[in-house]
Image (cartoon, rainbow, N blue to C red; front, side, top):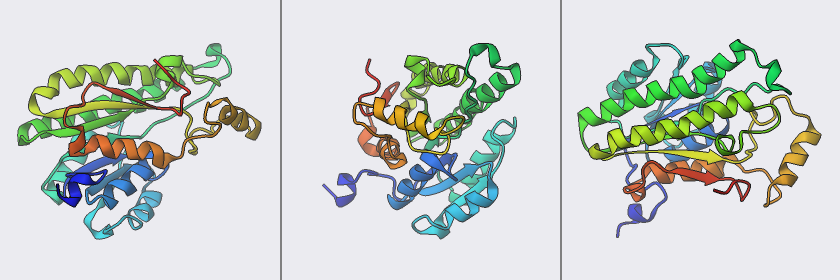
Length: 259
């Protein structure tokens, strides 16, 4: 076997990969690792200034690009795909990490607007990004990979006021299973990842330091996950190692979630 075949990101050299939410958190870690594995990464984020600075930090920075765009726009998915094909002349994979979390102490406090923004970003935008990338991959032939971040909340219902968020993440699991059925005949593997509690800015939304300490203590491993630990799974699923994995929801929760 070649050295590349032994690497985590086997087969990613020179391949076009889209990572959303790339300016921070799990998306940032995934984009950095994919770039380090030789992929040409299109980072997508609503925070343009942070994204532009982030892209400069990636290995072989001149081989990548950043797209500042609101993924809830109807034209956003095709705009991103067209940009990648125009710049890279290649498209292999998609990792959807962009998300929004609004915590409320009681379901009675959740507004329609808060429900809509979480489902529009977390679920609706993810579906249409998968649709645009899936159809582009199908048209090009040669297979591909599509990965969407879910959450432990898809199974548990969430905690600390995250019921609306968790509902959107449950939709992601069902969505990926349906998309897998549609795209597997074309060699396009579709999967989701269910992280446990990860040390990112999003986790801390609406929580105190004491809350975060209690959450970490509740994990069987006694700590929060690092973003890089989720990114490693995402890059594995992008690689040629994952050629027979589809419709899976990979539990990366340090033992917090089991099913």
